[in-house]
Image 1 (cartoon, helix red, strand yellow):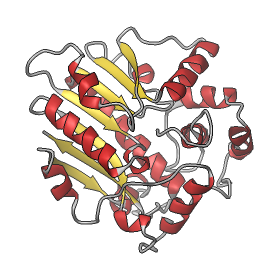
Image 2 (cartoon, helix red, strand yellow; image 1 turned 180 degrees about the vertical axis):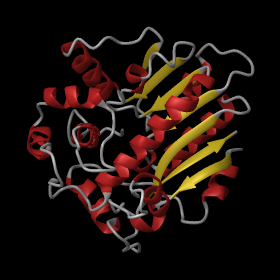
Image 3 (cartoon, rainbow, N blue to C red; image 1 turned 135 degrees about the vertical axis):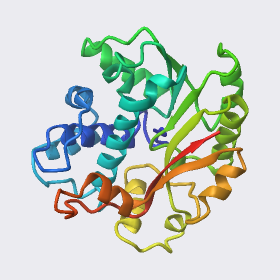
Length: 295
């Protein structure tokens, strides 16, 4: 998660952690996820921002007024999608890179499945230091195959960092960019995807979420789009990069990547929030989508 320019912590990273904690405790059909680590961490967050948000951790559909419409449901869908992917496929990759990791806990939660993989968490030094301190405070052990790499994506060249890491020819890599690229400058996003395209061996994969570019200009007025742009700005986070709807293939092809799967709000609703009768139980913010690509 991108680090806010307004403070020494990332409000969006803390908010995601708190919402994951809320989801873990959910009783409503379709809303529960399995990130128990987020619940533990959320109790230890002490910033004024997080303390105000934690009042909404109670069960049910109560959410902070600062949460844009459908964003909680999108976060749940994103968490479920990535958790399912880790359970089924993450062990196939020699190296897993989690960029903008925030309070991501998959290296811990899925450590039994990832014993043959190296996991690298890359995040802003301040955010990463804060996470490590929280895990130590909670006596949560760091898996031996997890490596922390501090990086300011706006200041450091990712390709230089990747090239310093040990690797074997032909090893498959997995790159996770969850809740990251929308907070970065377009040139920074280009540099990241260029670095991945240069470093990754064939058959490596990347999963990321993104915002549609017309959300940034205010032209997209579909469900939750204006609220998500303005809401993040109000907590000190700014959306800076988007991909034009219908042009994801073009963006990926520029970096020698091929689209495997694209999931907009409608697809995610049907996959994660439809009950056995086909009724959709949660409406997703339409500003965001998830992409899965392969080199």
